[in-house]
Length: 85
Image 1 (cartoon, rainbow, N blue to C red):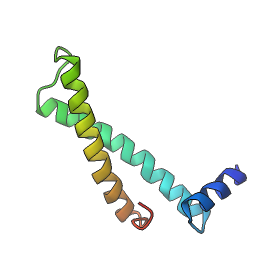
Image 2 (cartoon, rainbow, N blue to C red; image 1 turned 135 degrees about the vertical axis):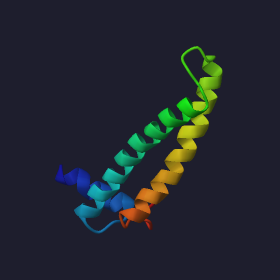
Image 3 (cartoon, rainbow, N blue to C red; image 1 turned 90 degrees about the vertical axis):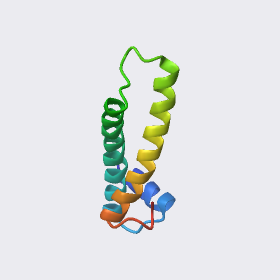
């Protein structure tokens, strides 16, 4: 486990294992938040199971990619790792 953390520290150019932990938390919280935003957006624009797959796919790509990028920057800023993100 220690080797993995040291490898991440060198790859991400951070100084402490605590920063690695915070960055991993940012990644995980961002992913769950982006999926929650997708769920809310799909309900708001009335996309249901009967909606054609290609429309759901295009909306999923647009919503998740955009919300992930915005949330990633926001969480990075809030957790003090904006320089990394």
